[in-house]
Amino acid sequence: MQDPTTRDCLRGALYVFSAVCIWAGLIVVSRLTVQTSLTPWDVAAIRFSGAGLPWITGRSMTAIVAVALAIQDLPRRGRG
Image (tube, rainbow, N blue to C red; front, side, top):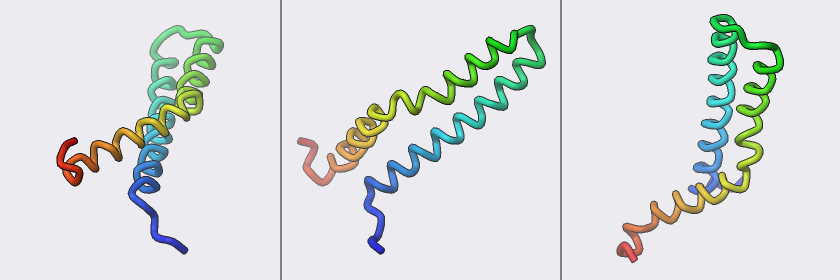
């Protein structure tokens, strides 16, 4: 098995961050549901939009990884 590259590690970290945001959002929405008078349709819309956002922006995640790797390589390239 090959050692993971920096790109693989960064991509994995972004996926973990996305998963944590989705689960944290679930807890926040659940608490908001108890404290306010949201209808079940409101709750469903908030949950699905929050969970679907990383899926919709999947291509953006690849762009974020590319930019992060480019920034990381700047010191080695002499900032130019």
